[in-house]
Amino acid sequence: MDLLEVAGLEAERLRLIELSRTRDVAALERAYAHLESTNPRSLSEGATSPAERELVRAWIEAWDTVLQDWFLGDGAEHGAWRVLMLPDESGGFVLRHLSLLAFWLSEVGSERLGADPLPVELGEMSLDAQARALGRFCTRADGRTAIDYAAVHDALRPLLRPFLAHWALTVHLVSPTASFDPAVGANRQALCNDFARCHAEADVGLAMDPLYFQAAYRAIYHSSDPHDFVSVLSDRAFAPRLASRTACEPQGSEGLGVLLGCFAEHHAVRRSTEPLLSELRDAGEWCGYYPGGDRAAALDELGPRWAGPDARLVATDAGRIDAARSLAERVAEDRLDFLFFPEVGISTASAVLARQRLARVQATTYGHPATSGSREVDFFVSGIETEDGSTRYRERLVLLPGLGVASNLPPEPLHPRQRPLDDERCRLASLSSIDKLNGELLCAWRGVLESGGKCAELLHFPGARGGAATAIECAAREALGASANYELHPALPRAVLLQRLLEADVLLDSFPFSGFNTLVDALSLSLPVVSLRRPGFAGGVGAAVLTRLGCAEECVATTTEEYVAKAVRLARDAQLRLELRARLSRERVLAVLCDGSLGAHFRAAVEWMRATGPGQDGAPVYIEAGEPPRVLTDWPRR
Image 1 (tube, rainbow, N blue to C red):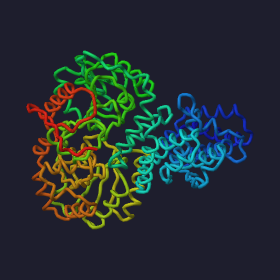
Image 2 (image 1 turned 180 degrees about the vertical axis):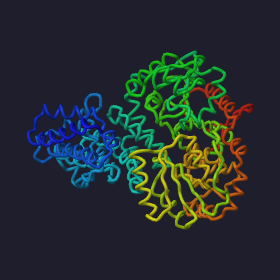
Image 3 (image 1 turned 90 degrees about the vertical axis):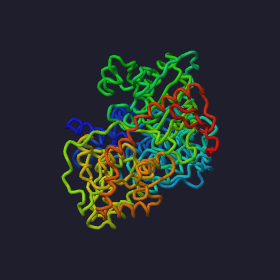
Image 4 (image 1 turned 60 degrees about the horizontal axis):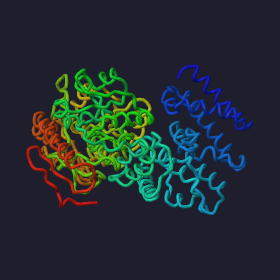
């Protein structure tokens, strides 16, 4: 933060203190305009000194004082809560930043965060008293606070239910952004279940908010099956706001399109989905839609293969919801026969476009390994070896041979390994990102380090920097114990990361959300991996990869106790690590993980999907290039 920011923030804090006393409405409007134009999270992350961080915290807490006294206090003007808690005609909230106050309090580490339970007599209160009680709770509580969402929803007057849903989606399911407490995951899972039941039949009545997309995206990290929650959210919150923009069904078109959001050359989505698209792309049969800027930005981010002069590409800036709606209209004008989403939910553009019928047939895949939840996405392209027989997808499953997913060729290290391969001191490594960390995983790591004794140390590469890296390190050290041999490395360029990873001996896969791209990097270096098999693709892809490579007995666990035991055995047994390294030659690993035949299978799948047409009913179908499609009628059905 520079001196002007510091001075301005201190002046604003003092103004808010005075404002809470004088009740100057015009001054409140000016102060709120400043809050709305400032992202408190960015401001907090930009505070480098303790004094600056304290100033940001005091500023947010001054807003909390205004909120609790002016809008929600017992002595506040009757009905003042209405401007805060009632949505406007569009379903949005005029004072959106104040409705997120618990999020901001969490970001700045305020001790004010944490609400008293809602009163048991909530359903018997007047509308005014009910609103104030709900407002005081929601502006001080996030995912760390348990709530019986269904009971509160049913007790509330219908007028207040949209605010409860808004808080659930923007605060409870999103904040804290980094939490490794199992209770937080349990709180969020319970709320997702209740949300799906409460809103299954009626429009939630909210305007779309980017944080709603984040709630849907993150649901898979605390649920092995987010199908019901994501589907209800799509039907009852997203789709109603997009109905007027939905295109008519195209007729007579042969065009194919692919949305190229999150498709930078080294992005995880591109690394795992480009092999599917390669054959059709090389044949020039796709039109790409790039939502990240103009043609020059597309060329810089996507490279010449997807954005060069010979590439069919529509480039626009669709990072905002309104801009994504405009892109949807542009796609609809092209009257495509088939539209493919490498991911749904990571980018704003994909979250918006996938809820509309922009092509006759629409499909998605593992870019984000969970159902899109959208009625408008017909097929989910998966792999026969990575699905466990349970149907977690709203889309109809199209199963390709093997893993159904592959990777681009990973680069080789620039320099040879320096440590001896049979070093008695085992260097464990993890590439688990902040979203994949959780209390159960950290507990398993602790068991490995404690049982591994002095011969085991853990290097953690979460791909984070700044405040996020600090939060991860603090939480990890607290969970692992002060004496644990743990070392966190901030975000590194991929080439540097691979060089550091080359010096490791064993990779600890994450669970219940397994890695794929992280496993590609580790296994391409012949690094043994310990993985815990959990349900679905997200939970089982690591186990499927290791099974294909013939390492299931030594490396795949089915319980956390077995995960710890297998990791400890590898940490202590240098000879076993050498045997596994011999089995995991780079050539053998790349033959499995960089499967060049996948593009042909996917092309056959696209032909079948187009011939079959839209619709989500039917058993999964297995498609292999050169063979007749085979409907798996005995596959378990939801």
